[in-house]
Length: 476
Ligand SMILES: Cc1cc2nc3c(=O)[nH]c(=O)nc-3n(C[C@H](O)[C@H](O)[C@H](O)COP(=O)(O)OP(=O)(O)OC[C@H]3O[C@@H](n4cnc5c(N)ncnc54)[C@H](O)[C@@H]3O)c2cc1C
Image 1: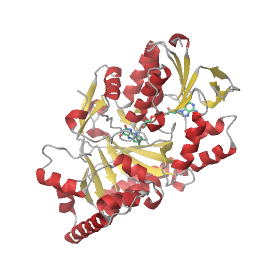
Image 2: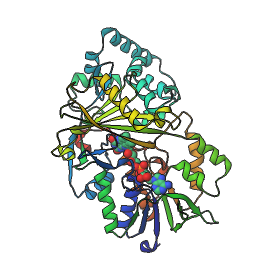
Image 3: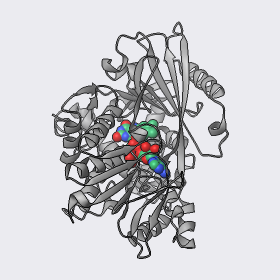
Image 4: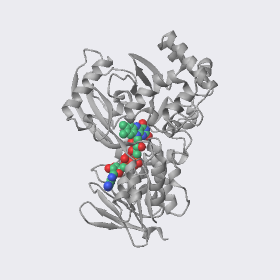
């Protein structure tokens, strides 16, 4: 097929949609991106409040994949900075380094707890759970029950809103692959010389004006290459012809746009349920998959030296939020000459939860109250402003057994020609930016006939993203 005469419609201008459009526009395809909101970047956008730039929660860019890093450098024209990473876990009024360091854990816990940790760990080693299918059994197998209870249970249950015994082991396998207590002890003894611990990455590359700058620049390059990006243009449904081939989309305003291929990054479940020919059992499968929402509460603090972390995981079960980001500790280009700090507290909720429906003023009050409980901010510093942002369908929930309905959806979409779902909620995968970008780049290569990668396997088959030594992973 002649590239110039082939039109590709892309639903969504997040990392997946834009990387795909960028790659196709470079190859000479006619591309049109339709974005529901009035901005590009999706969940990875940046924006300005109180004279400073912020992201939607912490957005660290990280990849070991050459094609993804090439995309990052090329789109930003080599203009990015390097951010030193400090992240800790806050639990029962104490800070634990994250990724966990054994000496730090020993120092922070009482001797009885330490004995219990070692005992539970030994028991688990001697008698491991066979084929752990849940997050709880997977983590307990690797760390022992006590460490699981302290460092995984409360945070994971806040995040997912269901007990860890109902969270699929896939999530653990993707995010905490081979961390082991023995490895942590050895690394503490060796002082981490030589072989860095697998989840230890203490520096990362970052666009100077927030993570969203990558996508703003990408959008402008797509336009320079002749591609179109239409904002505030929500897609209602994908249209198929009588031969089960995608032929375009219908917009919310009732108009339609034709294309030779449709790449969708809108939620997989609603995209499938919107099609005209979806069988009842596929709709039932779609209804079994669901998402978790995020509420971000930004607070402007009258001071610049609050705490030194980029973000803190808040495990303490006595507060509802699970993570705090301090944008002052990312890079000076975010705050310029302002002398206040912006922090962001993350809460997670389902649609039906009271907190999701709560009005913004009440949410800000809860955030301020919880911040006070943690004693993170010096008492003399005032909170000057607050802002609430809600992100629906933020996390695809990997509830045990989710693979079965997902497989039904995958098989159904695979039976439709020229309709390609990718992205985080687009393919129901717990993607980071890099995974979504990779999907975008690969789908472009598939459409151009250069490769035929199975896109459902991106992410789950990727090597663990934090593996390896820092010199391998920093973008040079
Ligand atoms: C709080 C938080 C912290 C995160 N931290 C990190 C991190 O540290 N590192 C990292 O790499 N990633 C992080 N992520 C994940 C990252 O934001 C996502 O992986 C990434 O944005 C996914 O890109 P995407 O294109 O697949 O989806 P999205 O970013 O969700 O983009 C999808 C786009 O499709 C549009 N859309 C949806 N429906 C329609 C429709 N019907 N019609 C038209 N357009 C539509 C949406 O408006 C959106 O712009 C974080 C996410 C959150 C929320």
